[in-house]
Amino acid sequence: MGGDHRSDKREISYKVVNIVATAITEIDGVIDLNEIIKKGSNVEYHPDRFPGLIMRIENPHATLLIFTSGKMVITGLKKSTDADLAAQQAVEKIQNIGFKIKNPKVTIQNIVATSSLNISVDLNMLTIVMDNIMYEPEVFPAAIYKMQDPKVVFLIFSSGKIVCLGSKVKETIDVALSLLIKQLSEFEVTDLF
Image 1 (cartoon, rainbow, N blue to C red):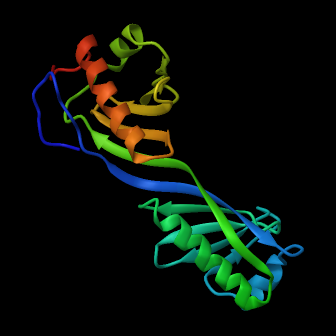
Image 2 (spheres, helix red, strand yellow; image 1 turned 90 degrees about the vertical axis):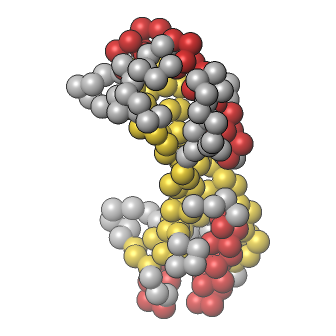
Image 3 (cartoon, rainbow, N blue to C red; image 1 turned 180 degrees about the vertical axis):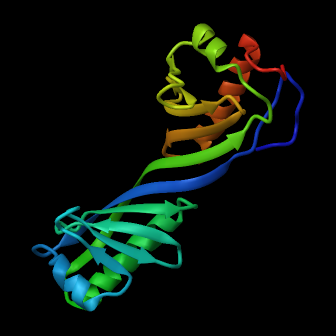
């Protein structure tokens, strides 16, 4: 996105900063996470603090939480297409240690994107004129806007910085950002429109 900056048809670009995915694998039995710690590399396991093993891989850059059941949570990705690759690499590492695990089925759970409106926003006014928005500056410096359709959450800062959470595909972010810009324009809560 980006380009045309006319006030009636303003688009903004955004950057995907994190993608979270889950993977369910086929496994024979359970995975002994202590065994992976002994024989694996780039792994951490602190069962007294967290029940999952942390595995880091370099290409694609990702961090995986791996559980004895073979379930995985994958974080730190920048492209959705890398989720399958990250899961497959983790499966191969676990197979090389001697566990019978295969066929990771990956599902994107959340895409986190950031952007800037390049203007300031009156967050107090925003909470008055828009529905599904909460702003408690003593607790958190951004207004939390729960867009209903598409179903995403925006963190909107007075500086104009925004964070979009909850989308599973980039196209949803495109639609949601366009709608947000339209709503901010209609309510005149910024100094741009």
